[in-house]
Length: 215
Image (tube, rainbow, N blue to C red; front, side, top):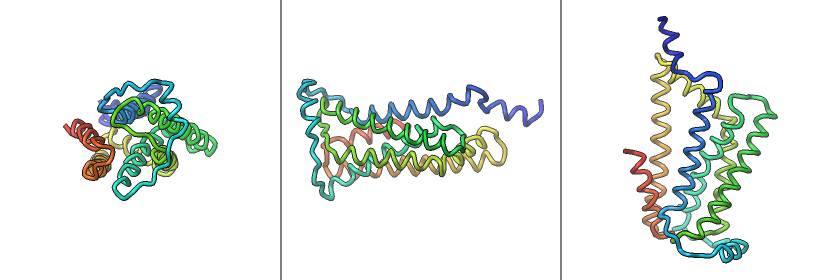
């Protein structure tokens, strides 16, 4: 068998091309929802009370200790917007397709953010504020804006990794460094989150999630 033919057997083709972006987006969506609700301590709040409270979400005056919350929420939703836009637009460079994908991805992320914030009312020690929603919206917006600028390059890097050869080694190093930096930065944010004592054990719970991912 010719070497190039063997290498290309590792590259999904046709409808299989959708498996990777769908899996990445679905997995990260689960990660966002799961991580936003742990430790799943039900507080017995009724739906009517939660709905009434949700219509009067406060905009908090945050101090220095709470800035890690906003940064963490912003960073958490950036990959969701990025992956969502990539899922909807694929490898298209058409301006109309990209614009439609960005808008739909942003709307979906906003719906998820609002839904998660509403559900958080039923779990202690979670708190809800407009500050969180604004930060999550900003993260989603930044993620969708990043896709047209870096998404296709990232896709090409992944394809180089799957093809094998000299370019694959470089692609593997780039992807490893990127993943390592992202997870390390997230972990630093949540460690600061814990030391600041904001939202009780939220930072500790996220550290557990990341410890599991690093195994």
